[in-house]
Amino acid sequence: MGSVDSVTVIFFVGLVVAVILHEISHGVVALWLGDDTAKRAGRLTLNPVPHIDPLGSLILPAIGAFTGAPILGWAKPVPVNPALLRNGRRDMLLVSLAGPATNLTLAAVAAATARTAYATVTFDGGTYGSLPLIVLAPFLFAMVNLFLGLFNLVPIPPLDGSAILERMLPASAIGTWYRFRPYGMLVLFVLVFSTGIVTTAFDPVVNRLYEFTFGA
Image 1 (tube, rainbow, N blue to C red):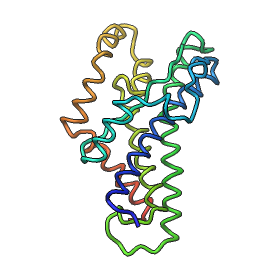
Image 2: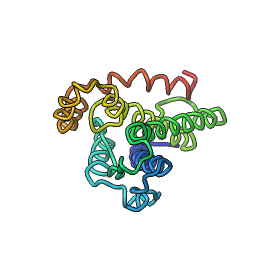
Image 3: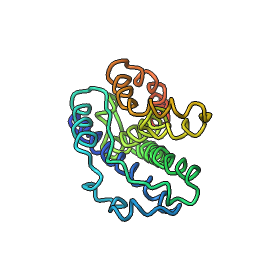
C-alpha cells in the first residue's frame, strides 16, 4: 500500500521524468521539421543527465514535493535553431506546442491506466496516498503531466504558451512584447509563490482527474 513517503517520492520522480520528456519532445519535433541542433547537442536521449537543470529539475521540485510548497520545475531548454526549420515561424509554433501536447498525452494515458487498475483492486477507502502502488503511480504521473501540460500553455515567457501569443500579436505590439519577455520568469515566480492563483485555477482540473480515475 502507498504511504505519505511513497507519494512524495513518486510525485518527485514523476515530475522529473515529465519535464525531461517535455523537453525531448521539443527536440524531436524540431528534428522532424529540419533542425538537428538538439540531436547534435545530445539532447534526444532518455538519459536524464544532459537534461537536468540543478535548480529547475532537482532543487525546486524537491522543495515543493517534500514541503508541500507550490511546485515549479523545468529541464534545460532544448536548443532549437529557427533558421534550420523549413518554415521558421510556423514550425517554431509546432515545436513549442510539442511539449504541452506530450504532457497532456501522457496524462491521458496515465489516467486511463490508473482508472483501469483501480477497477481491479480492493480498496477500503482513505486518502489516495493509501492506494495500492499499481493505482497510485499512474495517478500521480497523470496529475504531474496534466499540470505541466496546462501550465505550459499559460502565455507568459518562457512558457510554451507565450509562443502562441507572440504569433498572434500585431506587428505594432512586438517591441513591447520583446521588452516584457526578460521579466516573464519573475512574473511566474510571483504568480506561483505569492498569489495562489495557479492552485485556484487548477483545482477544478485536478478534481476532474479524481472523478475520472475513481468515479467520485
